[in-house]
Length: 60
Image (cartoon, rainbow, N blue to C red):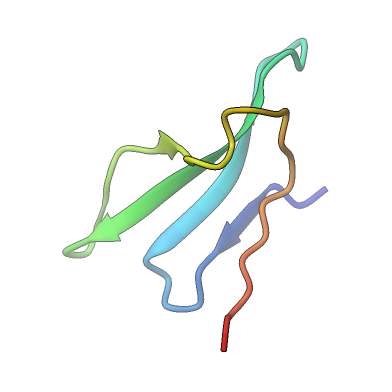
C-alpha cells in the first residue's frame, strides 16, 4: 500500500495517518514554505470519511 505522495513541484506532500485500531484514518497535508516543511494538518477534504492512499495528479 502506498500511503505517501508528493506534488510535482515538491512543495506539498500527502500521507495517511491511521490510529492503531483504524477507527481514525485521514489524509494529512504538509506544505514546504521557504525551503522548510510546516506542521502537518488534516487535509480539508479528509475529515468526513475514513480515507487511505493519497494520490496527486497533474491537472492541465
